[in-house]
Image 1 (cartoon, one colour):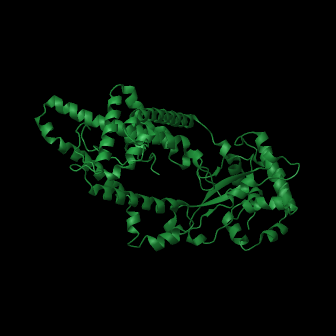
Image 2 (spheres, rainbow, N blue to C red; image 1 turned 180 degrees about the vertical axis):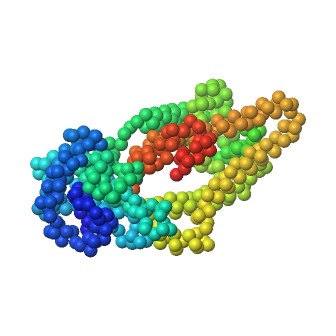
Image 3 (cartoon, one colour; image 1 turned 135 degrees about the horizontal axis):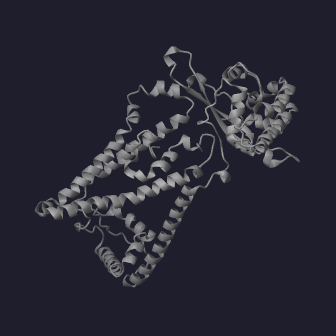
Length: 471
């Protein structure tokens, strides 16, 4: 067990933190507490304000509040109080397998958040705040002089302590440690996550879209009630239907040749409803826009999409290629993405990276190329369908056709892409919390999204070192 919080607050110099860890790794928590010179550490805490009070601190009030909380915890540990030992227990300790890459020592995130002082002491002063402190370990081997190996350590401090305060305190107590400020952070509580303009933009967009879907669903239901007297059953989803799929058309204005594969009565039922719905759509463009977001109708459409087919233009073999490609992408992300927070990087790389079967995971980036191939294939295929018409068209007509083709693809993709970008940027820090979950702009690509969002499809090409949504 390691008493991290209070070793960091002491004014001892010389040994690196890792050396202290290795010396104390086999000592039990009770033995540790019994042999600590508490008078020394408590006196050091009283001397810290005079030693460290610089313009780096937010304010004298917050500094004193943080130090008072640390002093109360240290005093409780000196008296072997159980509540104080919980603060000690919540701090990170060296994990087994350091030589195998165990560089993340998180401690207990949940225990830290539940820590508090009993009785009459101020609850808000002593409420636990979990902080992740990262510092580099430099290798003495000449072959590794340019490499940096970071240790991530979980520290449980009072809620009033801030990230810059803790970093300055550690760097003052251990100058040779050199805590990395960009990788270190004190985690917010769920109610402390800042709600900036991006959050409100994303929330407004989602609210408007949800309201649109609700209104569209109500309008669609009213249309169904107007059509339902023409059929015996009033269930919206009870009859399989054939959905026309004309995604491959250049301008989506070529009627596909479809064939109903259901019973004749079901085909008639579908045709009657489709004709009724289309006739109502032609009466008002507003009705067309509203019903485009109808939840019941779109679910009804997707439910039976697999029971229909286009007997002339559909490329069925692409379905299998899509499944294999997306499975390949998921496989690569599910294995490589957690590698950054794993504690056996060295052992895993030695074992798996030289395996021939693991090359499929390492080559997972090639799966993205298959989607580029599919996109180009379908674009070319849709153009070949209109080849004769394009050859016979005049130069002006060709410009109009190709311009409309490019505009159609752009308007089809951009709203969805922009919606995902805004939601990712506005809601990312509100999704989860935990010891390994980043909550600083410098630790994620959220900051890049906020800086280069307007570039849309060109952002990763213009700023290759600041990839947007690359995770």
